[in-house]
Image 1 (cartoon, rainbow, N blue to C red):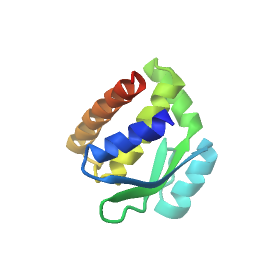
Image 2 (cartoon, rainbow, N blue to C red):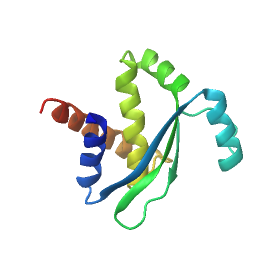
Image 3 (tube, rainbow, N blue to C red):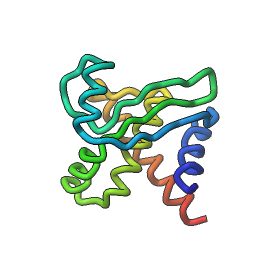
Image 4 (cartoon, one colour):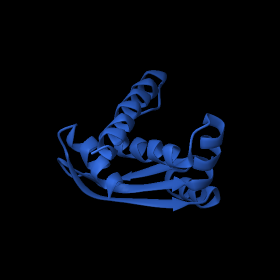
Length: 126
């Protein structure tokens, strides 16, 4: 429930409303297959976001590789739960229109992730 409140808060902080968002945890191989079939990309990734947002109601599917999350958490020296929250909010920020293809976009995305992650800790302390 805390995660739903937190993501709803992230969305409302950008002037939008929470719609239906599904988080699908899967393996590297499953997400690679999704990446190949739907995006014609042949590489591993931590998340693929399918956007179903309509007007101000944010919705979509967040396919997350649990394998990538575990590996990234280990590399970054953080708990798996922390990395999972970062990846989830990354997907939500994509649904809100943020991109990360260029260095500048990636920097903006990372800053927005950091702000959103701080919101989770505020929400948890209530």
